[in-house]
Length: 338
Image 1 (tube, helix red, strand yellow):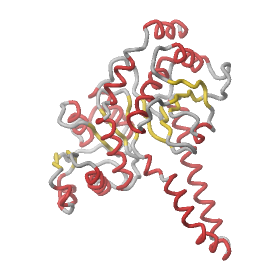
Image 2 (image 1 turned 135 degrees about the vertical axis):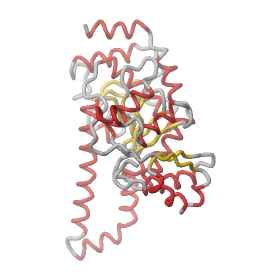
Image 3 (image 1 turned 120 degrees about the vertical axis):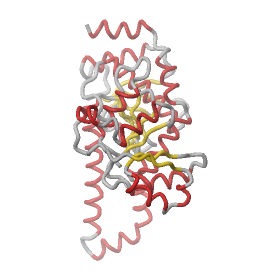
């Protein structure tokens, strides 16, 4: 029931994802009067979906504290509870991000060794997709948080992108070792010293986000959210300027007709729907957040991300790799912080 165009987009997205995954089934949480007719109109989905009725839902403008107090019986709350009880392998929602994180963290708890969950997603680059985290779950982070994010992001890259040996970088104001604040320098030192199977490349800059210098880029949630919004705004500006340019004259319109194929390929490469589906990494359960304004294709891609994460055993792999962190690395971090 969450998102700008729910439940229509959610049902249509589920139907699209169903056609890709032969063994996929759905529990649809929400107002049955609004959902049943939509499901009935899609015969392929009808036989693979069960509706769990609840009239309650989390409003888009609800504060996380309100959701925690009153949202346990909402469609979002019951969906998360289904993952906790083993009735579902993953939950996908286009609803209130803060509410989803608050409920998911409260109900599912964090994985062993994880202090804070992080929001991770994919970004298009010149090379291939890059995993970027944290996108807003943690405005302030210490060095230990950033090390944990690096582990989670590296496993996410292997699970979703299929990269055997992903490279990892820490977002900084420069690539030199002396650049940045004490927190990020401590995190870099720890990642260099850790006995993790991570190919750590050191610091990366803002331009590396779109260049694809590393497969994983790690930062705090404040910086990550700002960078993400700037990237989205830049893509929108590029589209607007290009559209206006092709409308400016007869020759421009003719040029558009001749370049239409290349422009369509560019548009598809940068289409945000292809990269929809951010995982709340570090929780004891798979939770995927879809953009609230996406369409059916975007929501289907968010479901695909959830399927990949479950099939690849992402949480189990995160836990296993965190267990390989040497005690002296963590103790060293805490000693530097104090």
